[in-house]
Length: 467
Image 1: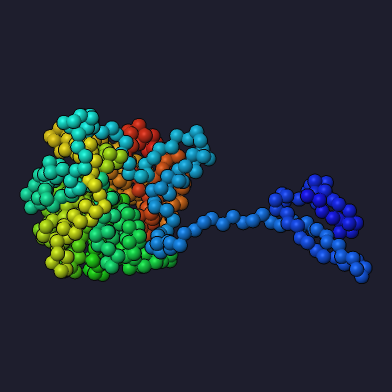
Image 2: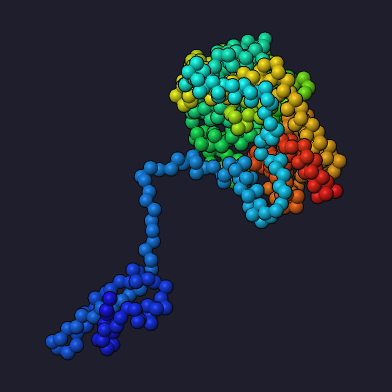
């Protein structure tokens, strides 16, 4: 493109222009501007002046759909992906580090062969005309529902029709939230598994996050700490529609006694509330604490129980759990809660994998129960090693007896600061207590899910750090 020099009116090649040769702008970013110039009384010369302009800002296409305002209430990322992200950053900094993960509660030991062989048999049968099956019952296979009822709820009045087989307790928590809707109030243990609070925020059941208190509005946080034996003072808790309660508790490892659960059931009845009881770690209980809320008289009228094979059989990847919704449980208008939950399940879920369900049935055979007991026993031995290590270093340690988690107190310190120090100095991933709620500040959760040699090495590093 030839342009005119405004001083000389001689053509100037853009390729020879000193301005162009040193300019960060490309030819495509230059605009020709026509500037009329009058010389004398009659002549008018059109000069073309090149002006450099900034590159056009690219604006991404957006739809006209508004973002769910409740998603914007969520603080940062979900706890465990955030821990994974920080672990990844650490590995970039120390690529040769032998990182030991005692953070997220993911199982590490192989699934017992008696269980995997049953899944393999079902999988192989799917390649035959006789053994193939497509969609199954959304509520789960009758044999598995009956086995769950007879194994875990014998004598408690729970029937196989009360049981809904699923792809895990966490997924069922989301379905239960859909069942309850947005126009309810909730109470949670503090600290507690973050899925209860986050799913409530997403559903629109809460107010905004109150930064100064590190909690959401419209949620009753039931403080559970060493001073109250990790069971809340119910007399100080306001009335709510739903009470999320986990026993043995994640993250503290505390299991509620029969007397405490009797108080909880009475509290729910007095207030007309529904308890969502998470018993995912019940098989780790080694004393006389109840393994099910339905061991408490009257609980079938006020409680739902959700459970999982994840931490018993190593099914964290296989995905299989169940939820019990007793026929006695009714909404305020007298309508069956189970019928509405069945409608949710049939709408949102096509049923657990038939291969997973074959594994679940094998879990509940005499051989499977023995195998799961041995796996649980292995992790409980890991727990004892971790507890003994921190106690020997002078820490106050909680949990561990009835759960695969050790709750270690670091008074006066930020949980995330302790997490970062342990990761930086020992290459061990833990979980900061504040990620489970404001009541977890000053604590760190150490998981017992790990290979024995990894747990022993981690404890050696802990001793080196805190000796």
